[in-house]
Length: 329
Length: 205
Image 1 (cartoon, chains in turn purple, blue):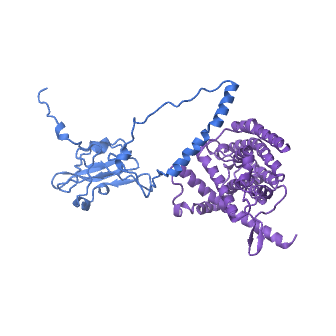
Image 2 (cartoon, chains in turn cyan, red; image 1 turned 60 degrees about the vertical axis):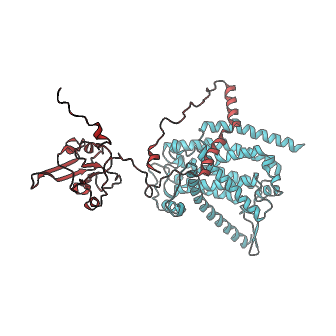
């Protein structure tokens, strides 16, 4: 392993960390604005032009707020839980190709930290670990609402994770690889070759599961503000709560990238146009997360489990079987 | 937004109708049919379209309060004002003490004395706005239309007891000279066409 590789990897990691931390902040701004416009409001308007500096104000507030560790909590677990959420969200980004290869000052840059051959498996695994954040944080908080949230987290987790894995199995069988680069190259021929056309059911299942994975509105029951205050986040304050927040929004961006690459062709043949197309797809998926939040009600935990176990999982299994039969003949 | 729009709430002109809610299914087959029905009906997309339509129409209803204010009605009861006579620019208050007497939260305190012409005049007059419930009785009972409620509804105070004195409430003399005193159309004011409605006191019972 030469030094140049290590330096390049470290630079890539720092860039991804900075870009997506900032994007998480912008994500909150976009979410407030989009939600406000959909509800005939204006959203943040006072800090900066059109409220653009609201992110900076929020950042200053989060960083300077007192870090309260309440009495009766399990200290070390309480303190480590937000770090798990944020860290695993960014760890999952290691196997995601954010852009096609490009040449910078005569040096070919691969905008992926590690093109490992178990890419999608690694991403799903690390994102699944991310659920330990809400789980441990909720259980260690010494607060009954947090405890309910942790219990819901565990129930939701085992429900949707099955659907996520099974729905991705069919595309994996078609591509024959777990690397997201291979997924992308499989669909490099243009819109007609996107996996969404051959696997529409898997796409919808994975999309639904992505909402549960990120805990967004139809399945926002782990941290449902109007039922259980903020769930696992109730006892957190300052930057520890901010880490949960960054983790959630970074997760939304990363799962959007995963969906765009696996089902919607990714960056295609790797031209500049393809790169912008990928960013556009990701932007659409991110916007859809906000859109549903304005439009749809939340489901109950038992409804989510009913949906995952009795509806989505049988469909996913059927999808795999049918895909297998079609591939065999 | 004009005052007319603000006041027109169109009560009773909407077309209310009963929402058509189907009975809750009891059998397993009924529940299954309902689930399938809801899945393929596309109701979720109706919701998505509704919020997207509002975003595209961009019909924002926010009033950015410190910069924009909604108009208030003429009968709004905010901080009191003391009016002057149009003829002589002197204050209308004759020190009768009715407002002090009727005040149900006991927040008006007044001291009167005889002036050099043996006429009653107000010496001390203060209202504790911390106690005042802005019921409007003082304005209603006032025989001279002297104390009225103005439109100033933004107040701050360092303490709960916050007093305004007679001089604070009295129309400034330069405003009066400019003819800019606002007459009070609210509680206790003389209604239009009052002269036609006045009847003679019957002398024989």
